[in-house]
Amino acid sequence: MKLAFATILCLIFVGCEQRRAAEVREFPDGFRGWAVIVWNVPGYPPLPTDNGKLIERFSADGVIITSTKQQFGWADDQAYFVDAAGHRLPSRPNIAVEDVGGVQQGGRSMDYTQQFVGTKAELDAAPFEPPQIEPLFSRLHLVPKTTLKPN
Image (tube, rainbow, N blue to C red):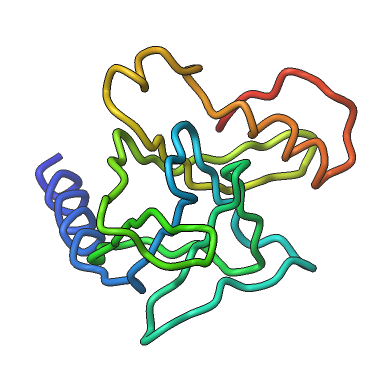
């Protein structure tokens, strides 16, 4: 029992010490709501990089689909609002919550990162899960619309 506990504890510490490329999120000025990145989808463009950082440029719908593989670990991520010309603004978005998730159905899967941009009160008033998840999975896997269950 002690050995199992020690092994689990070591794995947790190793995972916490793993570094990954920093992510720089750019949201349209005034964006509020759920933003989703769907990772590792063949045929979609990889995320651009700048000085080793992944650049995530969200459109107004809050969705990015990329062939880039999802990385795990810690990094100094950044978030910005950008104007119509793509210039970063001095005001910074508030990320109320961020989480990784996945959907599996019928032997198909989709891995994603979700984040809510806005205040805690806006988060409390928003849908519990990003509304984009089910339509994205259906579109990417060409399956009939059903109720999906996150894994």
